[in-house]
Image (cartoon, rainbow, N blue to C red):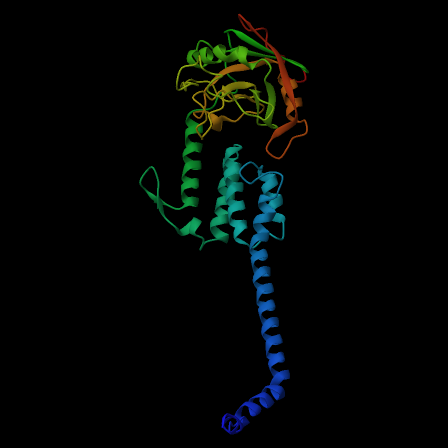
Length: 338
């Protein structure tokens, strides 16, 4: 009876289904291929769009000099790159160009660039977005920079900057290096706290290095080969809160010596000793000048032009083999060319 029941089953529908699948096989394969191709094309387009968006920023940030450290001419070269023109990256490079113009003392050039920025990017949030500042007045980024430049122009007109600091009359610290000596004379009369802090750690500069620099701007002395300053243990004899910040009339002219005031907390004592290789009065008020290189500035300039790694670290740091502290400053070096 079981055989009779089995033979009574109707397979007609199933057979028709197999026949339909067989007839439609090529169509299904074709649909699958089209779906795969569509997915691949979409992924390719998305990747291309992503790369297209990244390209301008890669052109800007992959440069040897980053925008915030670049000169106005270097920023102009970035703007000439076809990958940057007409992209959002152009706005920021042009804004940085105006900022760097102002920082290098070309206020008129900075105002011209800001006027062009306002004209070319009138709808940009950097022109239209009004944000409160320390003066509680709503201004856009471009408005604020223009106002600050005009205020600085007015201040400079009323208070002309000196062209040089007075000659230091305090103690001298001679850094003996493998390539020559660097003599620093101290302004103990106008920066007594900073000079006292420096004299406390001067002997610890021995066996340290001249290792980190931005040519034409500054060079750090007395750091490790990796460009790191002292740690807290190195500065155990120095009071908390060092290096001190003192208000004085000394400016960051070429050869001026100060403790680098890092915007980020390090150890208790942050004695990155920085020598200015070019004048930058914009640093006034950010760190205290307490000394002047009176011999060996040419040596520091030459060292700053040695091959460097991308992080401004010298490939071959120069070792400080001895430190000598004396009384009174030696005669200053004659001006270049005399």
